[in-house]
Amino acid sequence: MSSLTAEARALGWSLLLACAGCSLSKNEPARARPAGSLDSRAAQAAQSVADLPRTTAPEGSTPTASAGAPFVASAAAPLVDGAPATASADPINPAAHTEDADAPRVYAKSRFVWIRPEPDGSKEWIGYLWTGGSVKLRHKKAVYGPGCMEWYAVEPRGFVCVDGMHATLDANDATYRALLPYAPNLSSPWPHLYAESLGLDREPLELHSPPAFPAMALGVHEPHPHLPRRSTVAYSRELTFDSRPYLLSADFTWIPKASVKPYPEITFHGVKLGSQAKLPLAFFRSKDRPVYARNDAGEFVSGDGTFPRLGFVELSGESALSGKDRYFRTRDGQRWLKQSDAAMPTPAVATPWGAAVGEPDTSGKAPKGRATWLEISVGQGTLIAYEGTTPVFATLIAPGRGGGGLPGEDLIPHALTPLGTFPISGKFATATMEAPGEFIHSDVPWTQNFSGPYAVHAAYWHDDWGTLKSGGCVNVSPIDGRTLFEFTEPALPPGWHGVRWLPWLGPSTLVVVHK
Image (cartoon, rainbow, N blue to C red):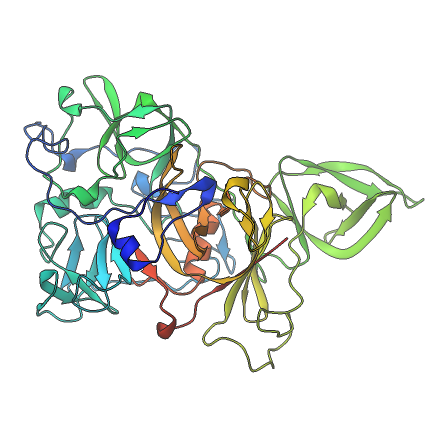
């Protein structure tokens, strides 16, 4: 795995992520970038960054965050009790976060603006803010503490060092205002637009004189001047300058568009159980699958139509064996499907604490609060989310291409997903992942650590759900990633970009992974 920052070593708490052998790249806040550096050399460019055109989404696709639009439901988008989803409505947890725009706030001008439990830079971080983010203050008065002249208490807990370079109290700070329009839009499943690197070397772009940003702190930029093939890029805007198109990456550097291949938008998502569908049900992986009918002799023959790839159908519960194949009847009529053609999310018999699934919980052992947990079947490629004893959401996933691995096995070299029961230990709205010596996935959305370096996270670089695909993490679609991120505990406080689970502050969603 790649080396950790000094802070991560000191904490003894790794943000490493083993997806495709990846680790989370975590930059420490750093000194301001000096004049003459990459981000300030074109400071005399005539065009203002405020006038940059917005990149539009592909024709016919759902509008994305980077197109400047909120998440708008299409015919393929999830619903909330029959109504289209919006930026503030989630298939499981429709509660919206609201902000008091007039309240005093601290504004982040860099990645990883750390939130400490006390006004002391030596204390372990409990969360962080992100470039363009802001959080409400709990107190207007600063306090002094080790490592910073001015610490401010923020909602709902913790302290931020306001040093003017990485964080400011001035909503009109020139650097903050310049970066704000291009910050990740967390009201959308797609905080950015995305592309695959064709072998990208970031150029000395002062030769082409693109528009410039004000001088920025080092913590704004990823330390990756070269993005090898198979690496991925997150970006927010496209600009043509001197007849050459450029993309503004998520870490505020300009990259030639010719050096990348944009990804299509991934729109697959699971279903809310209850209002959208009921168990049992089946999803269809890899390709369209044939419909079967049963004739008067009880034989299974080709029926009319197909079941679409990544579609789902509810089942009646009736099945029949014919030769070596088992067939299941759909709930809506006389159609049948072959078991080997489908992934069937099957709920557990009992919760992790021993209560019967589907029954009122009389165990007296349920965790406090909502008692949320995720059940992941590596072999089936499915995930079911539960609140207490009730299944509330089901979808397809892409676990490790090596299958499931038991404790003590060497997981990373064989791309295994760890089996067992784990609490979610940290949640990050976006996180860059690095496979040492290989490729980099930039600004991966909706990342939730559950076992050391392993996480449930969105994957914007493939659309192959229900199959063994990843390097060990549990890949989900961007829409499902945001759905699960909003559903699980601990909740990400409004304005925060990352949060670390602290047991004394409340429960954590359990992740149960089995074969």
